[in-house]
Image 1 (cartoon, helix red, strand yellow):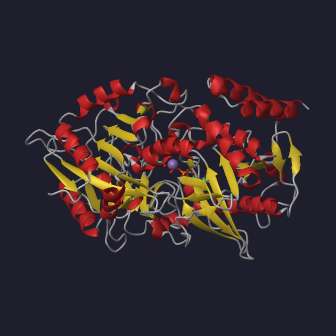
Image 2 (image 1 turned 90 degrees about the horizontal axis):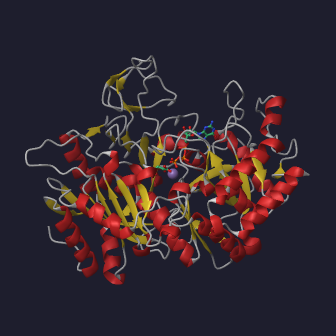
Image 3 (image 1 turned 180 degrees about the vertical axis):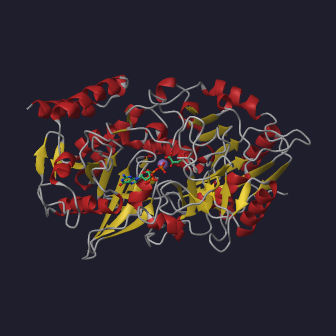
Length: 603
Ligand code: GTP
Ligand code: SPV
Ligand code: MN
């Protein structure tokens, strides 16, 4: 196939990778429906994909990954900056020369027996000033079809590269060469010790080896749009954040734009599409995972969603919890690691419908209630099973979601999953205290990464696994952005939807009911409601966060609104320990905020 570009830089790079990886053939992708259908057809024929029931789930497919390759691998993810200190204490680091040598050895001949796809894509609307052009080279057809949905794959991108000679190179291989005659596995990948998700920030270069799953392999997402972009953003005066973006419109038609940072599998997709239970208020989705934000001509902060689809957590997604996500994957969708039912539809735990059984994510016959030999229930879908859905199919997608100018952010929300201590909502006294809240956010572990341990972890701005440089410099960048924005900076809040009673029940109904909390935030912005001062921040005055129609016992509400000074003193001590490893890079303003909080907790 002749190359559809004359750009020397691109041709040289593709030639270099071809020589290193020695694929059987090279295919330049164009992002067309024909290409999508052809690859899906090939994957159905090879047994990698299952075509779902055309009547129930038009144009949709299911995949099962290898049981070892089911989520991001943070222990195998590297920021290979030239200087170790530039990667900082939250990232794994290997000298870039050494890492390239190691990985080049692995890449040598790694695409033998496979096709190498060259995927031109844009993060952000093609050609818009904030968008980034990139090329992913991958030997996984599964990656190609997912990129079709998650990014803007198009030959238009090649034309732009032709003009401006600028693209971000992203190299990916599943790391499973095929000998002549060797039968391929359903989900080729390499063992964990050979997996590397590598970033070379000085070169804006991404090299990923050995995994075919999610953020490890769809390189536009976490690798480019967060790790590489966060590093570019810091030098260029903007922000790349792990945030959903939504528009919340009042009955009077006033629009508020909210960006919220919660760690992986802590509720971004759900909040981004929530069905408001506050009469007259409605949510429209702009993005569910990543926000790129830049000060606009009026001095406010404008956000775009660089992605084109949702790579959403399947389990727990139901008509009751997130009907808009279900509608988004009603057709044209890809499902990974869910149950496939005998009538060729999909199912997962807490989908809210009965399932008689089917084939589980490990490709075994499965029935609900089945137990393993130790008596533990066998899940049909993996906890990190995902749907890949086109954003434009979301019934509440905001009409302005692709506006290259973005939307002006009024409110930042930080949070995490805490079953104890952290109240339902509190507001920062100032933007700088808001930064402190974001920087010391903590969360209990989820299934979105394989290897984060079982304990509560600090997860600044939900960005721990995604900051492409030193986390101390990253915090300083937040303070610098605060200075730039001045009194136009968004108001900052901290929420926790995940408080539990001692016997393990949710204290707060969550999901659509979270709109009550968003409404309170907007009322605060408008100065319509007051607030109660507590040592940690400003909290709702009883009766001003509407609970009409909810059946929440007064004792539960008191628990949700409680500020336990002793518990917060303990958290502060933990935060101090955690931040100590930032050394001289810990911003002075963080220390000021810590001292002020300590004083308020003592008073
Ligand atoms: P990533 O895609 O990994 O970044 O995750 P995310 O932050 O988008 O998380 P998502 O919205 O997919 O939610 C993850 C899990 O949290 C799902 O199982 C949801 O059902 C559950 N969840 C989301 N919102 C709420 C809530 O308000 N209350 C409770 N109890 N659970 C929630
Ligand atoms: C996350 O883990 O935050 C995700 C899923 O959004 S992945 O694309 O695998 O990173
Ligand atoms: Mn995410």
